[in-house]
Length: 241
Image: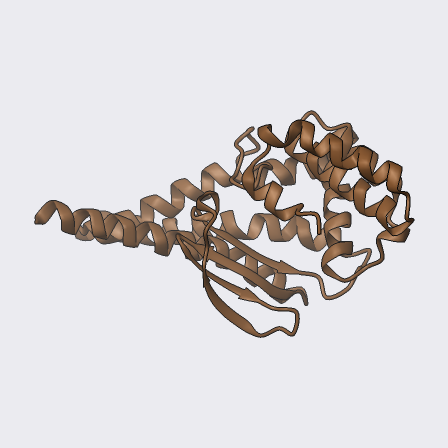
């Protein structure tokens, strides 16, 4: 019975640590005028619909159970890249601050709950902040990895900027007819198979908007060729109607 209690405490502390991390991302986004979009911790999710109404749901994608929190721009804006750069660091910073507060308290009081509430977010924050090739469930890099790629310049920065701008266009209801084909090509040139998949998805949307069925079919075929190597989260995100 005691072992069960410790397991439940461990799970609860992990969920709380995850919520704080994702809220760090969300708070930075909201503070910069973006709107709430999604929060997933474990199998439970909260999502805003097109009208901004908040809905609770059960997240079926296990890869997202580790935690996902996001805000989205209300409109396309040249300043959004800078804001997004700060949003990326919001989660790790929130985790590290929580860890620095709770871990010493746990050690001083010899309280296992406080120790876990300090050690878990501290470890989570440091791992997510480091620019290491750590992948997340959505098929891209960790927060620090993406921030590093964004500021490194070259192909990696082009990929991150292109992925952000194309996603921004989709979320803010932009017209695929006017998206930059160079951004799409940046994704297709990526060494990361998941990013390539996004590239072909946006290429499909680009030519769909132009009514070019031949190019649409070629893009779909490319997606099918690499689909088995791509995260299920990315596949679901790039679902073709």
